[in-house]
Length: 398
Image (cartoon, rainbow, N blue to C red; front, side):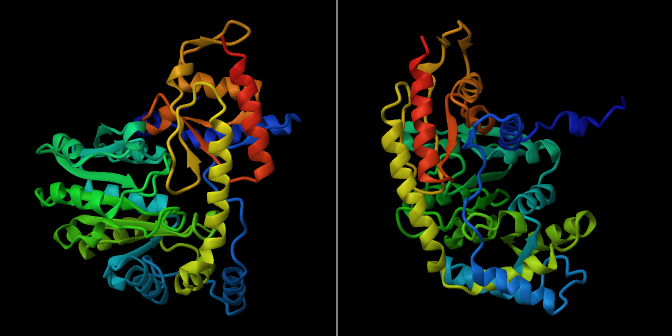
């Protein structure tokens, strides 16, 4: 067998994708697996978006697209930023990519040199760390605790910044914790960020529309750090368009140009039909996303109510996204009925997959080794059944 590059050897497989794959394998064997591992809405793309895509096919939008995206799409995103977020990004400051994951990778590869430090408040989305490793950056972790809803304080951020700090990546609403930074909390972080002018922040706002507490707040709203913030968003979560693959950035123009340059060599422009469909999504009133948001809020209440009955699960209330992120440290060190030790959250996830036939993801993958991530992006019936199975399986631990 041949030798792959060190770059690939140093890269970890996505834990969320790995668990989804394992679930599918077990389902193929005839096991009744309930998968709560993937971050994917269980809704269909809105009909008006699908109609726009059909029209694009009929109108023969089938050629290569401009690398940063159609001008009409970037104008629509510019309007959306102003309308929904109060942010002024011209079309030249916007680059569309094949998913927000590519958008993040473009920015990191454009800004980070080997040895540069990148701050990752934990829990963080699994791919942040791996993309930083790919760019040969040095990850610096700031630990968020369940007591503070997994959010970091300005004091913690100040303490993590050094001469080598180049970038921070965070999400709000957060994957995996569902936490949302308020305007006041972001203002506190902004005061720290503005002290170091060559320090940049990727604000990942992909879950913007799945917000249970009110108005979404963007970090770039603070004028003192506007030129230091790269706002990432997309249509996967809010518009249930995971398979369409489109994410976008709003950024200082020099960063947008750098991302266009790198994308021009890697993938070129994203799918032409997707882009035309996303114009319709961007131009729509955000209220079109509320039905899905309201369904997720109802499911959150359902899941939290059922999980309160599970011994050893410490819970907080996620304010957005579609995950709960319980601290399970009280269960670590316990044994299964067969005498196998549950030493890590990963062990617990494997035990629950085996014993309860419910798939979840270990918090170790998100930088929070005492937690597990449970997605509630599935039906009420499936969620109720899954929580009952988890409760029974946990009761068997000694």
